[in-house]
Length: 315
Image (cartoon, rainbow, N blue to C red; front, side, top):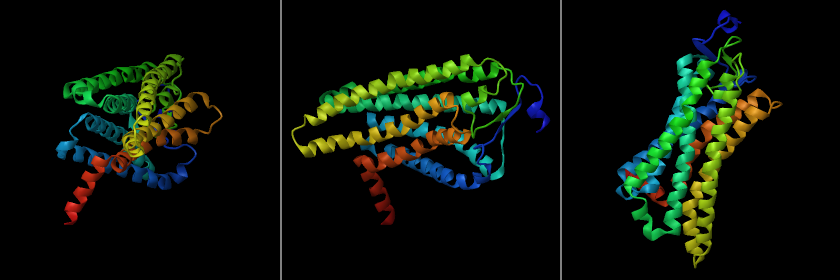
């Protein structure tokens, strides 16, 4: 082990990312699905942004929120996956201390932002289905902008303490992070100090975000489902439910991996380290890949615009 990994230091100049501990020999093979998911996420989310920008009929609240979701997914992917792949392909494990803190901030900030966007989408669907006559007057461009600003500010403020907490701890044992990116709890576990504040704050953010957002989303969709089942015909019920199905799929793909990743990291002491890291990677890789696919397939307006785009190219 090099001197930098064993010597005493308060703030190391660099951290060493191990990738997926215990599976180093398989990094090249693991990188293939990771790279494929990253490519699909980048292409898919840029496609969503392009379609909404170029199609005037999609300039509405739901599609503005979808654009916010696409930008959030792009930032989450680009903040983590390129460094991860360079580790897997070129054994480039070092990451600057400041770069590690920046990556950590982006991960936690945009994860909380994504949760807030799902709340905004649930609100949009609630108003559109339960009170359709007031949808355009309730969710004006000004209101949408204020909701977006509130989501961004909440996420930015909640994530701000993470890098400051990491910077305050002394690191006197090692600078090797047994992870593929700078996750907050993985970094602070390297500190030779009582890190309860960091651990408690991480749990506070998790339960604060999920405790506020998930009940709001759940109540919104309960009201939506009641409105759907009160519609007179089966065709009307299926058509209306179809507009919400994509949201529900995306919500599940986001919250379930995040919740299990956070809980296993803190309480699953008998779970192998590589399982921790793989679940954490699923949480960062899968939702950004699935969101544009789900919305592209299940949202008729986006699907029609996409088909028109490809048909025009063929002709």
